[in-house]
Length: 344
Ligand code: AKB
Image (cartoon, rainbow, N blue to C red):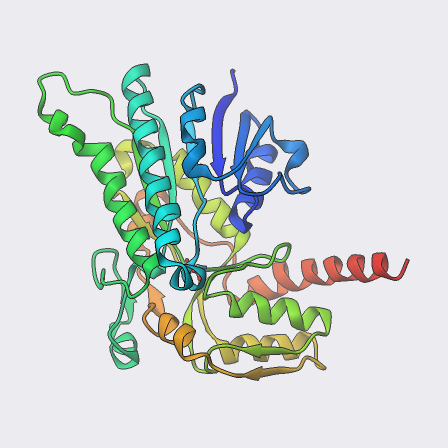
């Protein structure tokens, strides 16, 4: 069987590296990547081609390729996007729009839908205050779509753009012979935690930052209150969800955008787990009002029943398994290797 040609944008980011490794492990893909940075060491041997540079200016080059699947991961995350809003809009919205246009054009030209998988976020939701957040419980996809951040606004709008290009573009779905349109689907990810990479620019970063600091014996001042709660997920589950959605038959998918959930944990809960594993960890709480405000606008928990029903979603890692079977064993190996290397 011939290989599928895939494009991964933002390939050097956390999801990007894990996704490229996952694709290579599955086999059957010719992987083209793009990022502002040169290909990371972890993915370099796995990719057929890496195009370095600003994605927004690179899209023209992509017209020379017949991609079967596009994973559009490049983004300016929530904390960074609040500092440089216009730049975030350019990257998050303009970049997505350009790629959707490419996928729409190629789908029609080839007469075969290009699959377009887009990581959206719990940032697409927005609560007025903590009380409202507390009362909301498990949030469904179509509720509370009132984001407070530039990043959240960008994600929500790009979901709508994806729906537009895959269903209504030019109103040509009403033609007697409508063109083949791209196959767009998005997953609203919670905060992700990897044992191999550390995030940057996001606001859910306090969870992984705290754990990685504790594992290295470094002090950590957490930028949100101890009682702050949002949902989190192990990176392997995030990659599994992308593959499950990608493999699901299109006719089974009743929605363009899906929530997925694994476990909800407070910042204090992360500290408790970190101290149990690394008893000398020094973790304090020094809330930053702006970053706190962002997380207070995000749901504690999301309702992922549609993903469970339509494509059989179920995470492998709840809180206990996340720490005991994934994060702690991997992180101990990782930092043992790093300290062995630095002591050489
Ligand atoms: C962020 O914190 O900006 C991201 C997200 C929750 O989408 N990790």
